[in-house]
Structures are given as structure tokens and as C-alpha cells.
Amino acid sequence: MFLQRPLCCLLMVLLVSACTKPQPSPTADLPELAGLEVDPARLPTPQPKPPQTVSISHILVSYKGAKEAYRKIKLTRAQANQRARHLVKIARAKDQDFTKLVEQFSDDTKTSNSAGDLYVIGRGELHPNLEEAAFKLGLGQISGPVESPKGFHILYRHSPTEAQAAEILITYDGAKKYEPRISRSYTQAKDLAAQIRQRIDSGEDFVQLAIKHSDLPNYDRGGIFPIFRKGTRKPKFEEIVWNLPVGGLSESVETLTGFHIVKRLKVQRIQVRSMRINYLSESAKGNKPVMHSREEAQGLAEKIHNRLLDPQADFAAEAAEFSEGAARQKGGLKQPFGLGQIPYPIELVAFELAPGDISDVFEHGTSFIILKRIR
Image 1: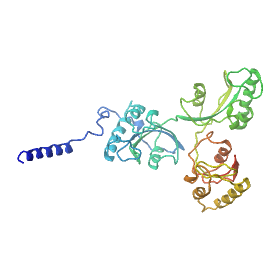
Image 2: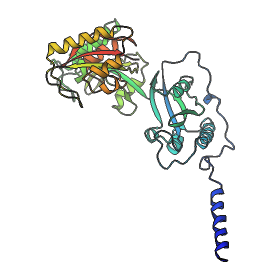
Image 3: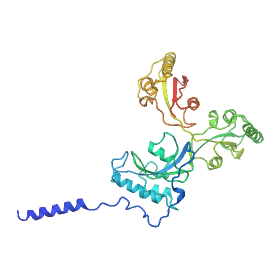
Image 4: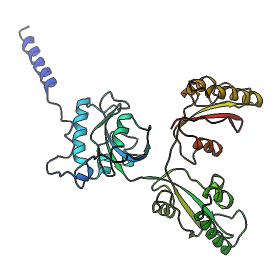
């Protein structure tokens, strides 16, 4: 007993010592602030006219218990806030490379390998706190820590890294890669491309001219390509696009594949809710087979549409109950999309709607569809 008491006391001392041992600072692995000079161009300043979209990259500082935080993160919320404030001071200093800071210190594993890029953001696409901060930034400016359920974000607004474009290609017999839809010589292709370029300048519709004349496989979509990121398309095409202003039109550019006319489009994503009533034996994934005849499906869609025209109607509730599409469980809500990403007939209807509008009933494949544009 005499020997056990000192041993017990020693164990208590060691335990207390371990519990009271100072924890490493949450900024211990970060560059020191001494000697850093603030770059005024990186400080947020009020914007006279908020933009419709912004291109944003971010650094995420997560903490234990935050949404999607991975196991190795041990910081408390207060420590994460302290770390984020330290990183803000580094990021706003002259000659600092935001991309390198992302690669070294961001806890967002989904974007840390792409410079933290969230790409082009429109209203309603980010957590409200992040949206408010992002749309207050000017180009080159860096926010203070902004909290979301995932942690603390440091936002950097930069020039767009996404673009969208449409193209008309006029090729000729014997050209590389593509064949003309109508046989023509090199001279005929060159002359036709020049004529089309002049017709666009005179006010004719690019999309309709592409549908009629382009030799690209996407001619039936008016030559429109989906939104793309820098470095994902052929260098020559990207060079043309990035040198054009939004809405700008290239000259006829000759390559080994033919003569190219490129129009840069505004990057725009919209979101809709969809009501889909299927007929014949088609069924949406996860649902029981649908056995409506075409006439029954059309009648049901028209009946639902009439209810939806009531200002008090709840489209999401109606879709959750009656829609036979894959998005039924989400009240028909679709992921945001841009031009060139969904079936063309549905895209045409969706992009003609203003936010809040409901489409007429229209048929696509073996379904009758109603859309409501959310934004």
C-alpha cells in the first residue's frame, strides 16, 4: 500500500500534464505574416453595379463536425476561423499566388487540384453567405473568411475560366477529318464561308445558318457547344474563343479541316422543375412501369398543367406526386444546365422561359413534359 500511493500520484501527474500540454497553433504550418505587404488591389471594394455572374476560386478551412469534413481534421470552429484569417492576410499580400495557397492549404478535396475553381457562378448557386460575399468582389479581390456549413471560405474573384461558343464549319471534298454535307470544292467552301460571315453581319441568325450549312456533327443544335473550361478543347479553337468578347464573332478562319466561323456566347446556366408523364411502357428509373396510352398521358398532362396555372399551385408538390421522371423525389428539380447539355427540344423550351414561367405541355420521345423555370 505504501508503494502504491506514490505510483498513483505519479500517474495522476502525468495524466494532468498530458491534458494540459499546449496544443499546436492552428497556424503553425502556415507562412509567417512578418514582412508581408498588403496589395490594395486585392482588398474588397464596393462594386457600383453587381455582375450577373462571377468566376470564383476558394480556399476552404474546415473543422471537426463541419459538413463533409474528413477524419483527419481536428480543428475546432474557433481554430478554423483563426487559421482562415491568417490565410486571408497571406492571400492579400503582394506577389502571393492564390493557386499555390489552394494546393497547399485548402480542405476542399474536390477543387484543390483545380486551383479551387468554382467556375462561373450565377445567383442562387452558392450558399447565401458565399453568394453575398462573391458578388461584392471586384476582379482580383479576395474576401475575408466567409462561413458556410462546410467551414470558412476565402474567395478570390478572377477572370472567367469557362466559356461557351457556337461554330459553323464549312469544309470541302478532301479536307482533313470532316466531310461536307453537300459535296463542294475548296473554292466553293471558301466562298460560302465568306458569304455566311457577311449574312451574319447583316443580321441573319447564326443558329439557323449553322443548322442549314455547318458540316460539324452538332449542326442540328445550331453549332452550339456545351460550356467548357480552359485547356479542354483544341488550342486553336480556344485561342479564337478567348480572343473574342462575349457576343463577338470571328472572321472566317481557315484550318486543314475547312473554314470556321466562331461566335462566343454568354455562359449561362438555368434551372427548371420538370413534370414528365410517360406513355407506352417507358418507365423512369426507380419507378414502376407506366402503362398510359399516349392519349391518356396527354390528357393527364393537360389536366395537371391547368392546375399549375393557378398562382397558388405548388409545382414541386405536383411533380412529387405525379411526375414519372427521375427527379420526382426532388419535386422535379433538375441540376442547373447550360446550352448544349440536354436534349435540344427540351433546351429550346427551357431557355425561352423567364424565371417563374411555366411552359405549355409539349411532347418529347414517349413523354409529355411541363417545365417551370426556377432561375
